[in-house]
Length: 187
Image 1 (tube, one colour):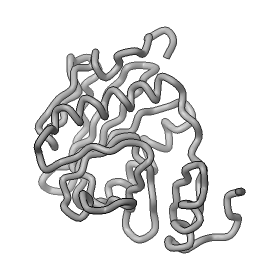
Image 2 (cartoon, rainbow, N blue to C red):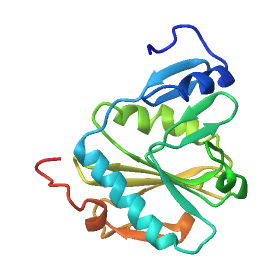
Image 3 (cartoon, one colour):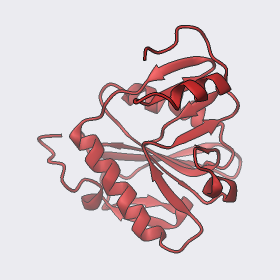
Image 4 (spheres, rainbow, N blue to C red):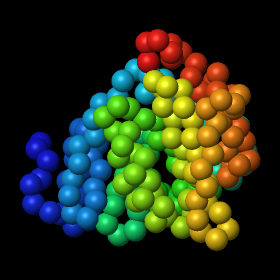
C-alpha cells in the first residue's frame, strides 16, 4: 500500500502502519518509508544487540532492535536500530516504547546526515535518554553523545579506542565485536 499523501494523526498513522509489510517513521503528520539496509548495517545491528543482551543479563533493562517503535512526544514515531530501556512501562508494552535510555543508530550513506542532525534532535526530546550513539560500518567510526546533568550533551569519539563504552547502562562492547563479520574493504 502506498504511503498516505495527506497528513495523519498519530492514531491514524499507527493504525495504518501496523497493517503495512514495511516500516515507516512518522513526524508531525508525515510518513517516511524506511529504506532497506545493507549487509554490513544488519551485521553491526545484530552484533551490538547480541552483545548488549548478553551483558544486560538479569538486570532490569532490556535491549531491542530495528522492528520496535519508539514514540517521541505526541508527534513522532521512530525505529532505532538498537535501544535499551529499563522503564517498567516500556518493559510491559507490546508495541510502543517511550523511555529508552540508550539509542544506537548504525549509519548508512543515505541516512547519515539525518541520523546526525534531525533524528538526534528528535531523540533529545525523550527525557529518559542518556546516550545517543552513532556507528558507521564504512569508516568504523563510533561516536556518542551523552546527556550532562545540566541537560546539555557532550561528544565522545571512541573510534580509535578498543571499545564502545556505554556508561548509561554500565557496560562496554569491544569494537572488534561491534564490527565482527564486516570486512573494512567490503563495508
